[in-house]
Amino acid sequence: MIRILLFAHLQEAIGESELSVELSDYSVGQIKDWMEKQYPQLSLQKMMTAVNEEFATDDMVVRDGDTLAFIPPISGG
Image 1 (cartoon, rainbow, N blue to C red):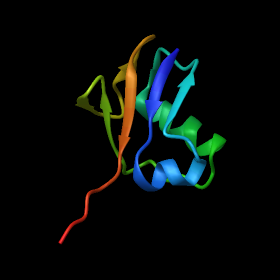
Image 2 (image 1 turned 135 degrees about the vertical axis):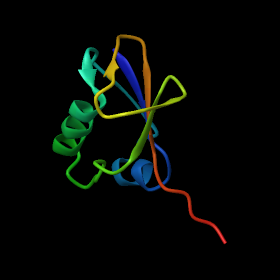
Image 3 (image 1 turned 60 degrees about the horizontal axis):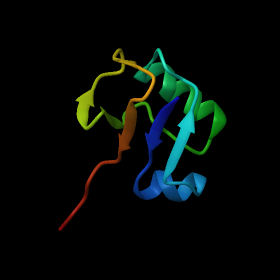
C-alpha cells in the first residue's frame, strides 16, 4: 500500500487530499498513468513528484509504505 498526497487543484478535482492504493513496485510514471485513467480530469504528466519528501523522476519505483506527492506548479506575485 502506498499513500498518494494531492494538493491545490488536484485535491479539488477529485475531492480528496490523500489516497491509499495498492500500487507498490510501480514506477512514478506508471502511477501517473493509473491516476489519469482513474481520474480523467487530472493531467499529471508534467507534474513534479516527490517520494518520501524527496523529488523523484518518472522512472523511480515506489515501494510498499512509501508516500508519493504530486506537486503542482507554484504561482505568486
